[in-house]
Length: 350
Image 1 (cartoon, rainbow, N blue to C red):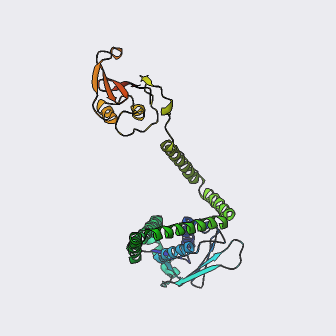
Image 2: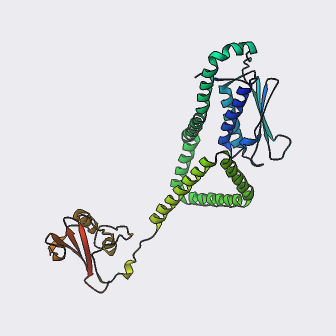
Image 3: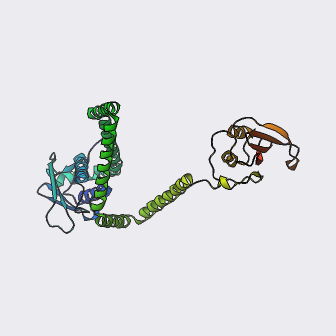
């Protein structure tokens, strides 16, 4: 793919470079403030000054940002540039806290006469190509980021030290399990103390303020998009919370309060999970309306015996009975659909 050519001595190209870099920096708004980025081009040196969000910025995150930005700028063909320099400033600071610079291949800028001769033929084509490359820059960065994660995981799984540690740990478990358990306990306590100390020493106030500023910049940059994303995120969290709460909540019926005998023709959809196949109050509550006979038989642990026709539901309603120990259950089916259920405890001891 042909590289993007930007002549920084041209006003339009200079503005386009600022727009492209601002869009790139917007992907790292947790580290730097895109709207406070300063651009300077003097004596064939392009200088970029960034303002850090927090004075305690993660150095690994800053290095990751610097490497990605360097690769991104290297793909651009900047005419008339020999060197690119980065400077990172804390909020309100006059001197940079971090600097980085690198040289690039120098491509001389065309003379004004050459520019005038070629502008009429190639300006539109070059503009369209540059726009396409700029638009595909961010997905490319996302793909590169995903590839880095995959390579890290692959390197971790193929690391010989990992398998060596696993083999050593397995031998220790087999030979001396008590020592292994004590070592595991000590490691768990050490990690717990480390986590507690981290929570106590973490700058929560500064972190909260940085997140608030990040949200303000996000809404200021594109209010409609930010509100739509917030709405979708809140809706997803509400739906997830509903399903998780429903999954973790207990049964809606207390089996201890059920009487010695019971007949139900409404069969309300109560929340209860079926137990092991067999006759039990838990499985009785689990029976739902319109269940087929094979489903009921699999829940109650076997085939039932036909008792006769239930005239209440017509000539095609059949009563099937199951008996085991001190409990008897009946189920009424109409066209292979459960319409009523009943149980009776044969003894009063349980």
